[in-house]
Image 1 (cartoon, rainbow, N blue to C red):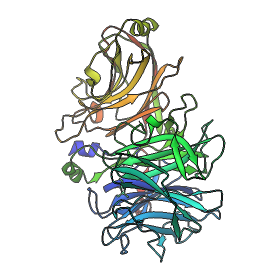
Image 2 (cartoon, rainbow, N blue to C red; image 1 turned 135 degrees about the vertical axis):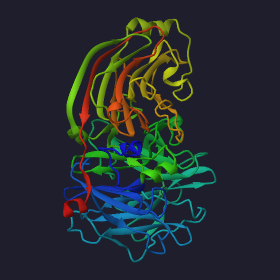
Image 3 (cartoon, protein in one colour; image 1 turned 135 degrees about the horizontal axis):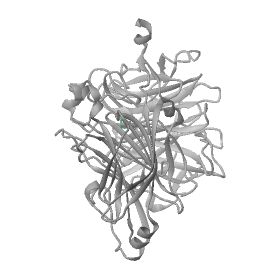
Image 4 (cartoon, rainbow, N blue to C red; image 1 turned 90 degrees about the vertical axis):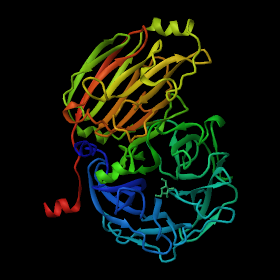
Length: 542
Ligand code: DQQ
């Protein structure tokens, strides 16, 4: 019981109880960030899907509001599913979402705020002419969902994308509309990738080639690339690719064919799905939300009375330095949760060592750590060592010793390391004869509970010559979100310790290399406050 209570988070968004999944229609309106989400008001498992709703001034402290939309019409009676918001030029909001009809057909519906003068947008009106879109011919009735935010095309009309599949090929259809009431399917597809299956929650947005400033979804032209993201229903993973959008021909092409959506880079190599971004006109940035599900059993979720979290919203922009990646970084506002900090400098981590970090309570932390490796050792790998096919998931995890790594941190660990989540780098020589750095997270020893799905996750992280290795780790009870090299590679884990809870949780540094020492040049560990996340009742009833 104590364990289950401990799993609730302190500065992550979660409803007071029951099931949550995809982020929906995020937007900033009259001073408030609005967040909607797939929600089952009745239990801690998926079903009876409604739109939950909360507002915030800063994306961290939230006020839960009444349900925004419930399944009460023939065209959404089996679920008010995922959708996106579009701002029209006059400042009004068009909310498009998927409804699962009385016959389980997936249709698109329109809703809008009942009272645009209410900054909290508490009441929503479904358009009387719904549904506005039915599955087109050649598309299965259950393969047509999750409309994107719309963007303006040169002829002044709107375009929006909807994910689907044709056979086993994942596709993104594009519709054209003047008024969000009537729509025309544009011939051809925006993009298709064979053998990727159904594309859920397609996201499509522009990024600037320089700087961190975000772009409105309608931005295009020189100095802009377009990112496509798809959520693969078959393997529950979010893949993105950076490419070029040809407005005239309604096609998008990835910069590199081998890093296409569904087969290339992922937003996050851990638990992270159905992500959706929005342009935050308040702070001129693009913000990404991602649904972080559970890795425990349905039985455990029912026992604790809730399931799922949302990741800390991430600012997302093009990585000028690599040209191949996006940068994802927790929004600055999360730093307002930082309280006291401890700093450690130049700690030499001998090969095969584990070093405790005396940080006090270790269940709500923000950690930034930088590492340096001896140059001679790197040269030794390059000159002497054989090429290695390393893979976070299959190369033995944190326990498999190599010339340079694994090294990093153990979080949510107990004193004698019977439970630990390892977050680490591993450097090896790739088949091209060059050094390659991996960023991985090993969950295998993170809990003694026997109802969990655990693994070792991660990927290559690009390191530019001259950069030191750096990681940031957000720890919040049952979630750990890790970011390498300023946000080039990200890994999120749900963790369910049975012993490393409350005051028993610790942090360690480790270096499991065979012979090479590594220096942790600088480590800062902040304690994190608990964010206020409450319902209206809390304020009204005291
Ligand atoms: N979740 C929604 C769908 C979407 C899926 C239903 C992705 O609209 O495709 O809850 O998690």
